[in-house]
Image (cartoon, rainbow, N blue to C red; front, side, top):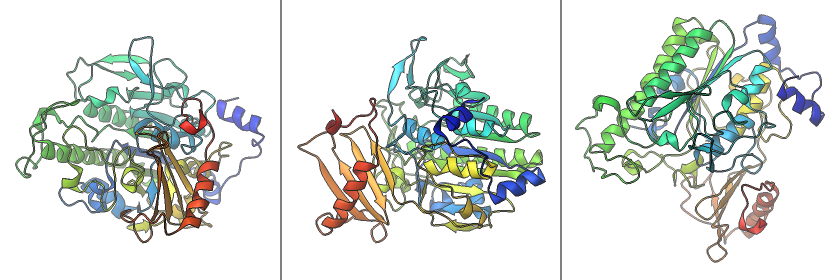
Length: 468
């Protein structure tokens, strides 16, 4: 018995699987959809043309929105890399997820990797395997090191290529990457993004004769800010530059043009994926999702204000303000999603698990926090709504946030009693989080504080000061 069924059986939820109406139709027609989930790294919601970007060209991603559905209220799993990926893959928000922050360990090879996702956690890869999908993660993993329980090959993915550790992914010219468990020596001579894309395309080229799930996680536009051979497209000389002297990341004479070129390079490669799927004759039976793991960054010389990378929102990566967790989310599903549609559904990374379970007609793992937005995608059935969304973050003094019915309560400096504070915003009236109305709505504050307390469980690796 595979791991997902073992866990479902142990929880008492493994019965005759619920199969949605859509899944029943697909099963009868033997046209199970393929899924390509593309997740950029530190790309702001304002960095794409379909979300208002005017200086950077993203025609391929914009076309996905024009041909599919653009979500306007979609949230990442966290405001940094590893926990956001854990939330996506397990369907549990950071109050319940096994990984809640960027924390690492030193493996036997002497390198640093992120804490291992526990073997008992059920991932999207494992769920897709129950329906005989071939699965791959290509890009950045961030949930465990080589030969460990958190390695993607031990978490439901048939194939892996890329960075196992998110810290190593700060360098686009790495010493090595991994193919499954085998180190691939590059000796700082190969631009990693290009190799990652080549491997992803090779996986698709090889596996389009069967149902597939590709979890494609390129590292663009995370710092370093660099492109190979100074390939700046038509951005060279287009912007007034502020050279970056190099502090923690490599120096960059033209950080604005280079950042724009990185985003356009990523967009070009999204088009390469679409073109290959079309060439192989499977584009019309493939769901393509594009998103980012968290909000924009301001590292390595990137100037998010210049590009309006966080759009109309306050904050960025490592913030629980909207700019740190509100992400682009575009879904193309030919013949199902009406072209050019826009969704205002409040949704999150932890919803992807139950959505995919309903899609392929299998039971969602026990104990997850997400709700399926398949009715939103298909226009069929009644769409459930979240009672609330919860986030926690364990850097910068510790942070928590609850969003409910358009209200948002922030708890900042959780671990510093002298600096600890709360802030309250009405996102419907004030999406930019300009006016803290904490004092005007004391009853709302108490309501959300109660949810904030109940929304999490204790985890030995991720304790706030009030738990110690």
